[in-house]
Length: 230
Ligand code: SAH
Image (tube, rainbow, N blue to C red; front, side, top):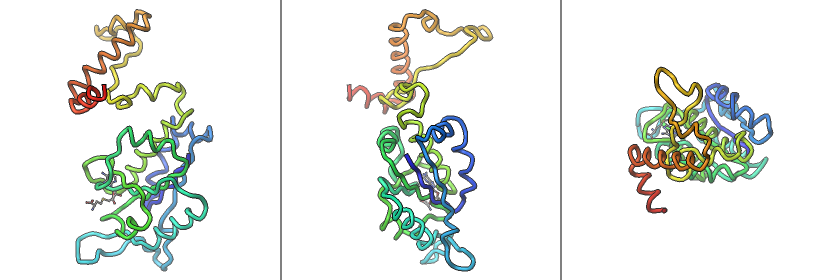
C-alpha cells in the first residue's frame, strides 16, 4: 500500500513513520510513504504556497496552483483509490473507515495549513475528507500521521501476530479488555487469577465479559450499537 502525502511542512512527518510497526511494514515492502513538499511545486520566485483570503477574512489560504501541479504529477504516474483532504469538517475517522482504507492500494493525502486550502481544490480533486476529531489542529500533518498509522497497521502481514488487530478496541464495537504482564504481583496488586489459570476458554470468556463491562461503563453509545448488531 502506498501513501503520498502533500504538505508544506514535510519535516513534521519525518519522524512518525520511521519507528516500530510502521518502520517494519516499510522494510517488509508492505507500506510505502512518500512525502511531497508543496513548496517545490510553486513556480513564482518566492515559492509562495499561501496567499491572503478573498473577502477579507483573517488568515492565509493555501494556493491552488502548487497543489494542483503536485496532484496532477502524481495522477499521471498512477491511479489513486482515494484523494483525501484532512479537514475538521470531514467524515470522522473511525475503525470502520480505517479497515476500508487498509484494503486500498494508493492513497493521496493533502494536508491543509493556515486557514485551509482554496475550496476549488476540494471540488476538483478530493474524493474523501477526513477529520480526526472535533478539535482544530494547526495543520493536517498530525492528522495524516494518525491516518497512516491507524490504516497501515491493518495491512495484512504488518502486525506480527496476524490476529491481534482483530481484538483491538472498536473492531467489534467493543473496547479492549485490560491487559497485564509480569510480575504477577506488583506492589501488592495481583493479576486476575483467571489469567494465570491456563484455561483458554475461561480466559476468553473473562476477556469478553471485561470488554462488555468496560464498553457499557465508558462508551454507552458503542454498547448500544454492539447490542443492536447482536
Ligand atoms: N479554518 C479551518 C481550520 C484550519 S486548521 C476550519 O475552521 O475548519 C488548518 C488545517 O489543519 C486544516 O486545513 C486541516 O488540513 C488540518 N486540520 C485541523 N483540524 C483537523 C482535524 N480535526 N482533522 C483533520 N485535519 C485537521
